[in-house]
Image (cartoon, rainbow, N blue to C red; front, side):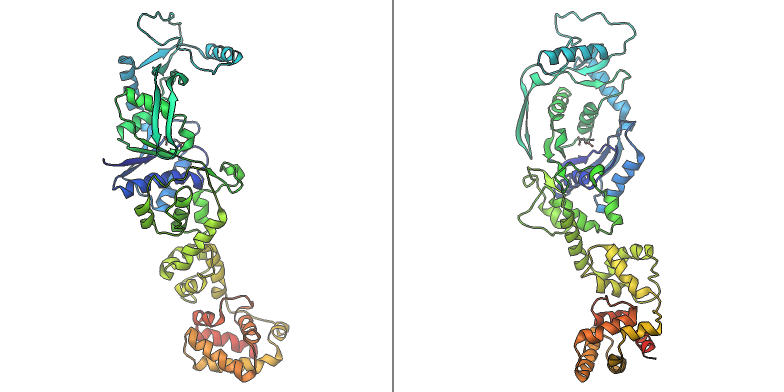
Length: 465
Ligand code: GLU
């Protein structure tokens, strides 16, 4: 079987990180099976759909590297096709016009509720052999309803939830087109999944209730239902449904906050799927390992600390040249001119072990690109104590002749510390202050390498004058 999966978002409202998990899994399943992955934009709800939301989805997927084989396909551009199928269903008796007005429907519902019955359409306009339909009312545009089977049940073996059986008695005749002729959501999904030869539908479990209806329509149209895998919801860290209102962030927000796409992909992959106890893995490994059997059955919970931890892992293990490339825009945003001053790759290499995000790298890099600090006499007296000056002076000399490496500078420090009977912090703190006007810097020997011997000596000498 040639596997074909799709991500079918409705571009309405806010697209949070959890939403993109519904793109990641079908993508990985298609890639694992050398199949096709399709993006279908379900934009028939004109009032709620927006281009902005479409852009967020497409950008987010591109950023995560979820490449497409087909699409984006917009449902609004397939309206003629839906109309064609509607016509075919009417002509072949699979669907029928229903003239029941909104008022009548409401009355019916009230009555059913009063009788403690489940509200459902009563089949008034459903044609049956030997049945006389009511006279067609004047000036009422009908909806079109699908003639759902009256008996039997719909059974499917959900790849996540196991076998599910719904009795057809519980399903009434679904409206598949509105009075103005526009097709409804469940109907479009079926036509698309059939036309696009989708073999596996991997989507959120908020669609479990739609599934038996979709399967019935699909079978009526002569199609074979795909395999369904319904993913449990992603909850936020407080255990609530994720939404913008309670602080959910979009993929774009994570990108702006300095997260790496590899880390976010790794994080999302584990949000409802596992491979033994593997926590950190590459995209290739993920595709290699991905299967439907290991999808989680209980709701996944968003864990911002874990995402940050993963981001740190990816930053720490990244190649400094590549990391510098992606960190550059963040540095530029802070006003750092990476073309002047120390080599940015070296700065990044120095900072990456301690940084959680690209913003933290940029913040840390600032130090190396600020102009050489100038001090008042009082500042110097307070921070470069008289007693330490001879050692500082010796250090300048030692640096002058040392190798311009971390080891070389460490050796220079060692000699001076021994000669003056000092502990490292006693010398390193004033040195940091002299170099940057702060005592918070990464390891001093590494800092000297990045800043450069000449610049370091210039700054150190300045405080001794
Ligand atoms: N458009 C639906 C949604 O965004 C998904 C439909 C589907 O995957 O079948 O929830």
